[in-house]
Length: 198
Image (cartoon, rainbow, N blue to C red; front, side, top):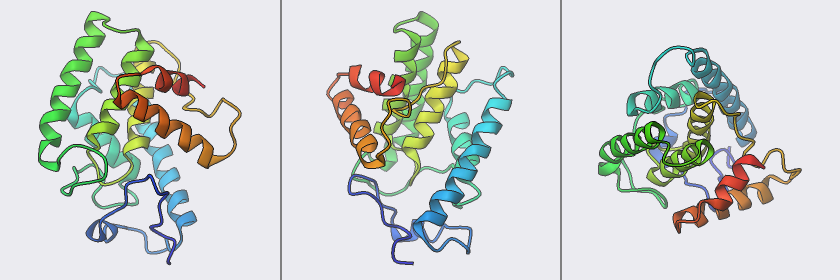
C-alpha cells in the first residue's frame, strides 16, 4: 500500500485526513486508484455531455462542483467540496468560493462579448480553474473537462490536451503541460493554447 498516494513531484499531495476519504476498500495500489478514478471520470463526462443539450449554465460554481462530484464521487467522499487546507498551488482556501464566482462572471462576459476567440476563452477558463485549485485533488482533470464542455458549447471540438502530439511518455507530456501552465501564470497563454490543441 506504500505507493497508493505517491504522486509525481510536481503534483499536489493529499492531506492525511483527505486520504481517509477513499471510499473503495479494494483500492490498495496506485494503479487501482488510477483505474477507479478514470472509470469515474468517464461516467462524469457522460453525465455532463448528456446535459449539454439542456440550457443549464455550465459557467457556475454549482455546475463545477457537481461535475467534480460526478467525476470523483465514486472514489472520494470529499468530491465536489472545496478544499479546506493550503496547497503548493492555488489560492488560500477561504477565497475559493468568492474567486470562483468572480471567475465565472468574467468567463460569461468573455463569451457574451466575444472578448477572445472561443479556444482562448476555454483555455483561459482551464488555466484559471487550475490556478484557483478549488478541490483537494483532480483539479487539472476537472479543469480540462470544464474547458472541453465550454468549447463544445461554443461550437468547437474538444481539446486533445497533448494527446494528439505523438507523445507517449506520460512524464514528458506532464512536463509540457506544467510548462504551459507556468507560462500562462506569467501571462503567456500561447503555450497552453498550443498544448490544448496538440
